[in-house]
Length: 57
Picture 1 (tube, rainbow, N blue to C red):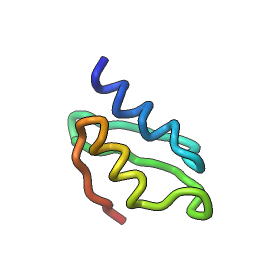
Picture 2: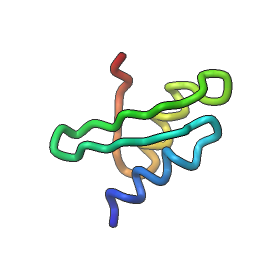
Picture 3: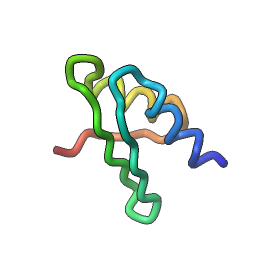
Picture 4: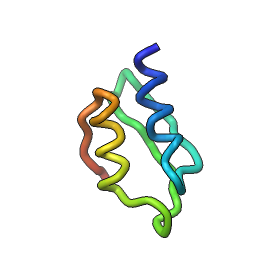
């Protein structure tokens, strides 16, 4: 349940089209429109859901 909250917090951001979470690897792959969302907003949303994160390119 808590894992879905983290995923949904990212999916609800404007510009996010897909979120794929690999909990074994502790990684989320987020596809988003850079004109509508930015990496800082994504990491903030994940942290607010209890999943501190960093951006990997």
